[in-house]
Amino acid sequence: MSQGDKKVTKKIMKEGERYDCPREGSQVKVKYTGKLEDGTIFERKGSDEEPFEFMCFEEQITEGLDRAVMTMRKGEIAVVTICSDYGFRNAECHSALGMVPENETLLYEVELISFTKDKEFWKMETLEKLEACQRKKDEGNIFFKAGEYWRASKKYEKLASSSLEIMMEHQDYAQRY
Image (cartoon, rainbow, N blue to C red; front, side, top):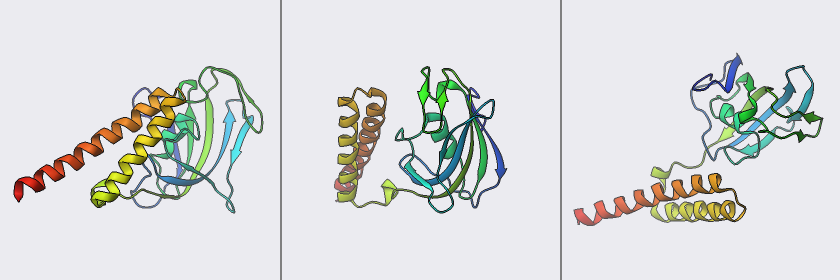
């Protein structure tokens, strides 16, 4: 992965299947262990019998781990190194297994077991598209009311681009007939 500012790097330990990766909104199943640089385990999620399930880019895990998982393929195992900017930010954090100090680099051993993507917008019928837009608006409103403006703006951006696509489809249809 190691792109851009190199604040999140990924070393592939076992190649995954095919070429498809999860994207924002994908439901993923993983198992991972989070460690500090000294090897102290601070978090462990999922197992072979019961993987940890979450939705990509919904802030259910650290941003860096989210970004790394979205570059993985089914069955891939990787070691992900995350600087504090994409980890737990600049505050101490209590996890189930221990304390994560401020500004700590995090190491995760991650296996992407499986994932399911939402239906592609262009494959949806008009009613499905309108319902998807309403969901994005509702999600954005929830984030906005909670003071999570960045997350709200991401939902509103998706809503705006999706709404524009619907309008363009109908304008094109009206011009043809």
